[in-house]
Length: 191
Ligand SMILES: NC(=O)c1ccc[n+]([C@@H]2O[C@H](COP(=O)([O-])OP(=O)(O)OC[C@H]3O[C@@H](n4cnc5c(N)ncnc54)[C@H](OP(=O)(O)O)[C@@H]3O)[C@@H](O)[C@H]2O)c1
Image (cartoon, rainbow, N blue to C red):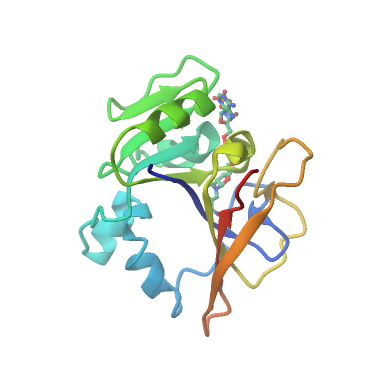
């Protein structure tokens, strides 16, 4: 069965963005970029593919899940379909008008379970924190791009999650000269 993978950039202290929603403190350049632009190129937005002159490989992910507040900054910049090479699902509780390439989901857990039943590549949980908190029980793998910075406050990796320990098994960590560490975990059995 295809897996739900939360692949996200995060600070040392577990925030995926600052209080204003920015993540300029996270490193784009450096030797870790080889992984971001290579292995995880499916998780780059269209403007990054165009700037780097690369085609999305579609070897890792074919679907992306986003919360409304993750889509919003792109909409403000005129990008209505940030990942046109993937099937795009956006969680919202409101009636919203979106690009025809985007499917809205009012029950992200039910949608995720249905998507997992379908054939295909893994499903990328892009974020943000609130949606990740909702989908935490469904997450099979975590890939955390841990940046060498403390934000102090901001958007947590998992927002509004129920207070309950959920064990994950550390699989590997790759350390880069840039200071970024890419940590991978799989959900422990029977959780
Ligand atoms: N560091 C990274 O790699 C990374 C990745 C992604 C995002 N981010 C950042 O994270 C921030 C956004 O995260 P966030 O936690 O504030 O918001 P979010 O999870 O992106 O979006 C929250 C919104 O999603 C909808 N939603 C969430 N749970 C839902 C549910 N159970 N059912 C239906 N709809 C649901 C609601 O939309 P409505 O209000 O429309 O009902 C809610 O207001 C942004 O600043 C973004 O830039 C960072």
